[in-house]
Length: 105
Ligand code: SF4
Image (cartoon, rainbow, N blue to C red; front, side):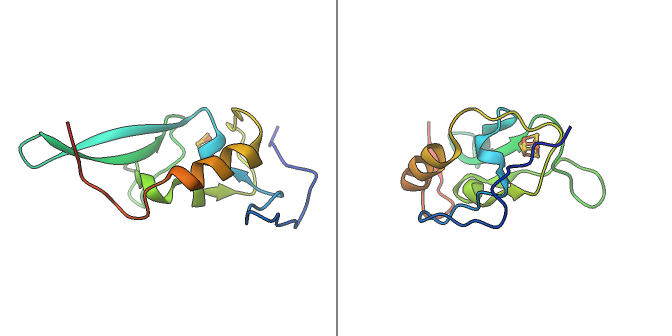
């Protein structure tokens, strides 16, 4: 059964659509590291471990971590919320980097 909020077409003061679900608040949205260069550095990416994010040819698609708060859907049968959406997204948006960063181990 799709998980659909009863709050249709409502945008709250933090810019969060209450009629949508956000992948960032789903247990299947996982943060991963992708090595770059000689392996001493990495990018942060997110993946859906339920296998919902695909490229046109069927390969798994990863998204840049700094964009994770933008991944929203009307519904998803695999959605498993991790907690209160608004509090979580508000805190997440404050902590996300503003661009794709390279990190060092
Ligand atoms: S299972 Fe659905 S809601 Fe959860 S991360 Fe994957 S696509 Fe997003």
